[in-house]
Image (cartoon, rainbow, N blue to C red; front, side):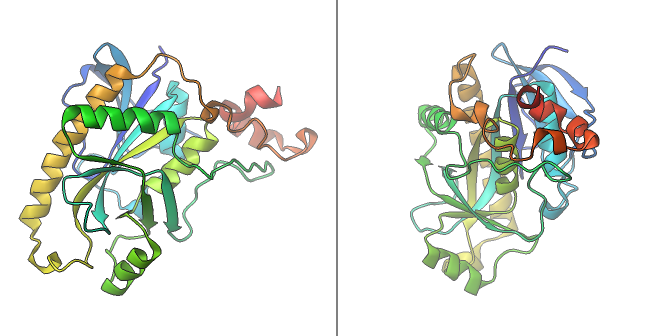
Length: 287
């Protein structure tokens, strides 16, 4: 199979890409179990891409139920070098309004017990994660968003909460005091695993509403949220289409070498089973 270098992960409201041509579906097997859904392979403007519905078709999976390792490993197995991830978020700042697209460059983790590493079982690795978003992909995503006429904000902090319930008002106000910008339930684990897999990663955080801190919260209806989700989906697809068209064929960023100095374990001490399981990620460093 021809390698697919661009991956797209769609979240709430973005369950497929209408622009995909020459579609086919593939069930990718991973050492960590099945991904959320069969991946859809196709072409956008002559570029091969792989699309994954994060929550499965019909939105079956809660954030805490997602097999993040399988999702990112499946992308790596297909040859993906860049992942563009889209997800619905709530705004924690007045100036970040519904229908805005925020391109965060930082995360804060408020999840509990989610597995967010491929390593362990006899092989220790510690990747750098001070800057969790690929700066090159972030810049290109911002230019693509600006070129579509969508209001985009570059930079900001995405607070990743456990869910599935939304925040209490006290929590929402606390996160605002911390200086957080948007709140969601999924993207932090993807970013960590993408870094370990040496895949560039950027998030389109699609604002659907103000979180419960806002005075207008009580007047928000389900119909309003659904309408915003639908419009956000259209906006995200327009941005992704432009971004895919403009991505260069090759990349020149440190994401591609994230494991170069991260593997700590003595090579002779790595269990054969673990080495085989993670061969796709570590073979070039272990020889």
